[in-house]
Image 1: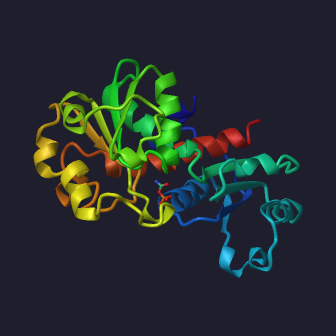
Image 2: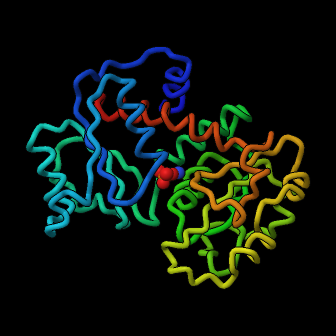
Length: 273
Ligand code: CP
């Protein structure tokens, strides 16, 4: 349903009217794509987006997440989009009566990223069942990987993971990288999240690139029809080469574009319930 509606919105059809609904985008972690594509989605639906600045808020005086968000409800905000570094941050928010949309929680989940990934895959292949995907890199710290492994498996896709041993959290079967490149329909790269593991990486940037970087040569070893995905932001010269970012197999720009339409669809759903 969300993907169907996202495709309609992408075609410029059937926009719901959410004119005048106030939404706060409360990002307690940095974000470019999620935060600003939610803003664009909100604007397209006639909503009134307000961006929350943690640094100038009473969070700096020690106000809790719940007390901050409850305040927004009390002053007349109609919905919240929240990204927070704590896994399952939403479990402490059950007394909030307005819709809360996830912009990602810690290393837990990133639902709208998964939806835009699914839309991109559906547009490419017209199906999910039977497709083979390898998610490559910093699996352990990736909310994108954790949601996609769960969701894509449920959609009938064959999901494998690969990357350095220290990032392997056994959340899916492991596959050798060079084999994955030859066999997969989709290679989904992940950003090495240096900020989450204190730069304590057994491989340095150069050796990571040598062992797991998607170089031009590796792109050419992929199947003819296979595609490259990455949630971004990316570390050029670590997990991905300049060549791979915008080569003909890359769907990374399309993922970013599709983010607007799936976020329109989830906003519509939030106000339909
Ligand atoms: N893919 C993603 O969540 O990007 P941002 O962190 O820039 O929102």
